[in-house]
Image 1 (cartoon, helix red, strand yellow):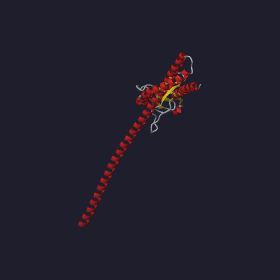
Image 2 (cartoon, one colour):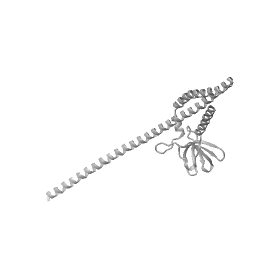
Image 3 (cartoon, helix red, strand yellow):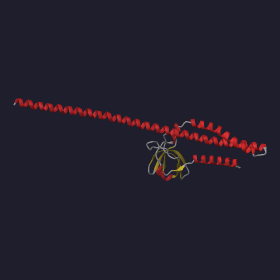
Image 4 (cartoon, helix red, strand yellow):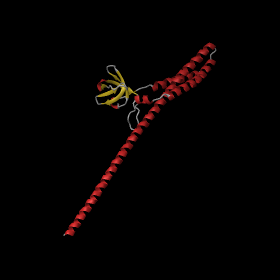
Length: 232
């Protein structure tokens, strides 16, 4: 009985985790921001998926295809509901779009987790199936239960490990985007800093030159005064 409870707990937990990972959250119109990937359902029943390009108080512009420049205008009064994943931000408070994450996401951990998880779950499920088999007198029926448990456990476990690997790849992609954006902003800041420094150097040179010219002018004035006194 304990073994059956263990299997039931394992499968139930797997189902809940899977459902939780796929869940979308409702988003209010006021919370929408540029670069957010959302699913918009109109009152007409039409569904639009895409990235917000611009949001006004009474309408928004949605890009439905990342490879095309066409934008779809959706009036606020037409929107029945808006859903999407939790927004992902960079270090400066700007949203990282799902398209950018997908472009940078690799499948390294997805493959490792899938293969490794399949082997681990096969062994665990086979062990549980063997325990069930021992408690069944009918050998043929026991074999069916054992292999069904093994197949089900391996499939469910592999799926969850694959989801975990994909989630890991996603987090790595997000971190890389954040670092890249931070470097771009840092480089821009350094460039502007150098430009300001050059401008300040030019201003200092100009100021020094004016000061020199003013001193030279004062010397000339003084020389003229002395010459006038000599003439008198």
